[in-house]
Image 1 (cartoon, rainbow, N blue to C red):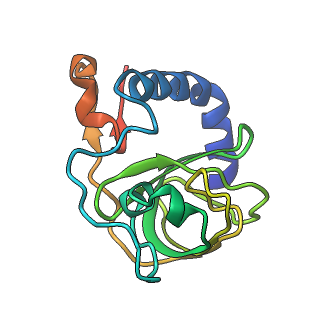
Image 2: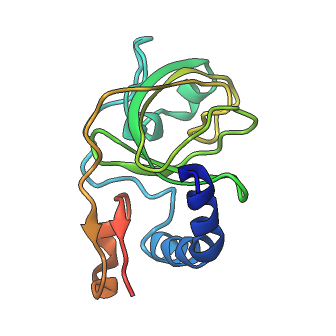
Length: 165
């Protein structure tokens, strides 16, 4: 059986349960809109490219009313082509749900990618809909074991996790 078919079969079996668990943990701890207490970078105010997820969230409403170029190196932490769900984690460790619209790129969980493009106003979400996606060399993010650690869920909010059982 091909790797792609195995992944689809796995996602059909466990994807819905895993997604519900991850979504519940994520939302219970502040959700997708919570900003990291440690902003690793500042907003791109001088016309430079956005290079991180946090940099995007640091943009002011005025900046989001202008086109913003981006080039973000990240790793796909979860992808479900049937439910059209994509989560990524950038090199600074910030994770995000990323709408990808009709982007035809064949995302794969665990794959290191570079997303390049321009956010077109009105900018509401960190989105790969109009991005050019390319695979890149890079180490995957550290996988944090979450088994038995559900009571300390805040440490898992923007991270790739592994759950057993």
